[in-house]
Length: 629
Image 1: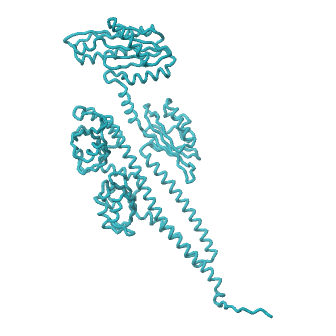
Image 2: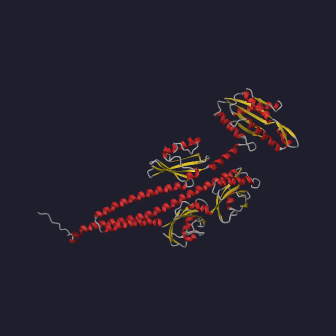
Image 3: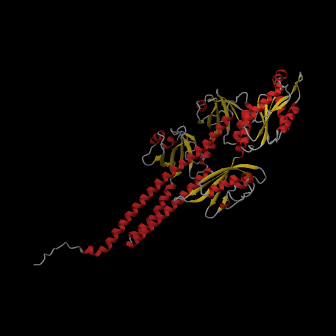
């Protein structure tokens, strides 16, 4: 028995004839469809990445702008602390001088101090009234404020005002504010933009607070961005009304459309103050150029693949994979450039330097020679913090070396304050900062940094510190500073030495004030201070303890006999006659001393010297006594 024969349907001849063509065509069509889909997705991704990049750039610009505002607020609050308690009427000269000092180290066009009633004095010695201003009311509530003033009373035209409260006894007693020209802030906003991009600031209702500087900008001269956009063709169903609702809700927004025959993208990022927004506007060509470039790259391969074989399809696939790798490399280069741009943006006002760890090179910009009067002293990254730099003071080399160790150990950032020497010989206080730039794997490939001139701020701070530690009448150390410094000395470098403490007060000082007047009394105290300065070394500590009482810590006096000799010299030197033209009185002092012989502390030394002073007073004044153990 034979097996049955199963008859199947016969394949048509035309299929057999064209099978070798149909399969490649199907494969080519599939590849073309896949390539078309891939190209479309890639273009969409380019647009999405562009939107994200625009938002990130605007957020970075917001951070930079907020950092600048924080620096300005810090300057205002430092000045407010210094002027706490000053009277606008009685301390006018001091206020104007202080305002001018702080204006020198800031970017304000004007700095002004208002009392609790709104009476204001400017650094130009003008007087205005600001009691009806919002920023003044905010200051009296203890708040910082940032306001746009449409009609400034100090200068004509609209201005931006930053204000802080002036605190006295824990309460706001006045307001300190700085005035900016709108053009100045507009310049700060746009100083790092490319020619094709501009920035401005608006509020949540669309009113333009700080407009663009460029007169060619489409919105130049406009007052409300929502009103302007209502006449534009916005993409993706966005309307000016929908944008207004998003701004009122405080959202980040990116819109695109055609205005004034120009396609543009705009990003709105909240500034975090007053409901204001930073707006970046970029031409649509930034996206369209990349999309057109992709289209130009894909069209020829697809045209060739349409009439080619499977081998050509495979070749196109490999080529597209190579293009994808190139795009990834280009994206990485762009990411590095953007990262470097952000770093340079923060450091653009001072000396900038750049180092290559692999090539061991170090380059400075032209501002180095402008500020320091000569070329850089080192040009290799390995010499940073290790080689001798002729511009750095020898006393500051330990600080310089510590910063170098931080950099060479791979710490991603660091900074230090030290003195540079100008080619002309004068010293300049500077802040040196660096930061490593890393690739996507976290490996550092570049060092960028800056050298900031902080000489004015440093010297002003030193001056303020000296004033806080000194007695205003005599120039000697005040009570608190003397005891702190004396205790640090006796516990530290002077712990194993032999020192002496002399305290003295003016005999019958109340009688001098009552008879000859307080002016002569002040002169008597200054005369005592001058006499002490003439008798003692610059290394000894001279102090006015308060009233008519003085103290001297004599370092390395040797022994009690030498201390008694010094006490005797004080009594003899100070004794003199005071005359105000209407009467005469003798100026004399009584002195008490105590000896420090490698043990004890300043409080114990003071008690012993005070007992000796009491004994000297009891024995007739105008004499001295030294405490004996």
